[in-house]
Length: 356
Image (cartoon, rainbow, N blue to C red; front, side, top):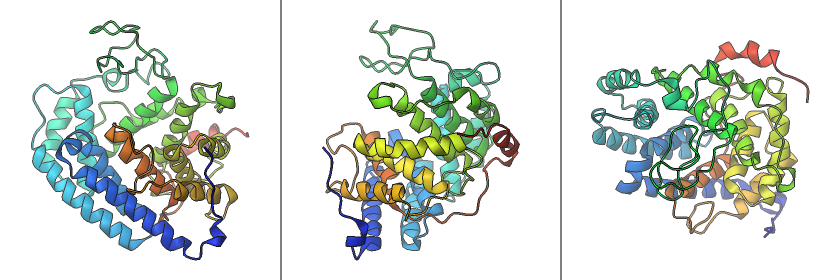
């Protein structure tokens, strides 16, 4: 159902309205983070939400609130994880890396745990972490998704679950790729790169183009294409610290502009929020028609409890992550100039910056 939007010029307190919406969203996420069961499962990601909100917000009051929340939760996260658990698998190590990086940023470092993680991480290959070896092959299309029947993650190439024998859906190569981008980014920023160098994973960018778009619902990969492109932006601009030049990524910039109206038409605030903040990173201003339309949509579809997305969803990740990306799309960012998190990639980007 298409929501009726009130034009921004008709709202005399539009700035205050946005600030209230963002603060309510942040408080919703903090309430989730304070639930022990939720924090045990998603704490590493929630710490990143608080840190990057604090580090990139132009609104000093919002930044201070996110910093306080993040510091309190980082202290708890460190208390609950004093050491690497015995016989960890690759996903457990990655979760520890993700949370440890954010906890470090929030002022709670643990050099002893970092040494343990480095030793444990070295026991696995990049294929264990990423499902493929970026030095020898592009992101593949034969990685099974989590079994919908029993929840087991099966090894690459399987068509049926080895536990319950149910048929397995296969992840798109775009999903495999953007998951690998975030994992390699985290390892490189933290200084434990057993999962592979970010440049090697990112180097498959030309092979992932062109992006087809939604094609009226006929392209099953469109959803993952969008998130692959937004995560290109996130990992290159250090999750909203920097802006990017559109001439570095003209195909991706054009694709995001085309996809924002589609995300609104399909009533997907999580996707819309990611696209909006990525377009802002490409220097589209709040007054641009696309950004204005996107923010109006997000303001109109916030839930009564301060969240965005389906309020009946049972998956906690969906509740907080939709809220995080939505308020990211409407808040003001304190950009720290135009640059890349990995400056060595600029020649590569310029070499492959094909006109659209």
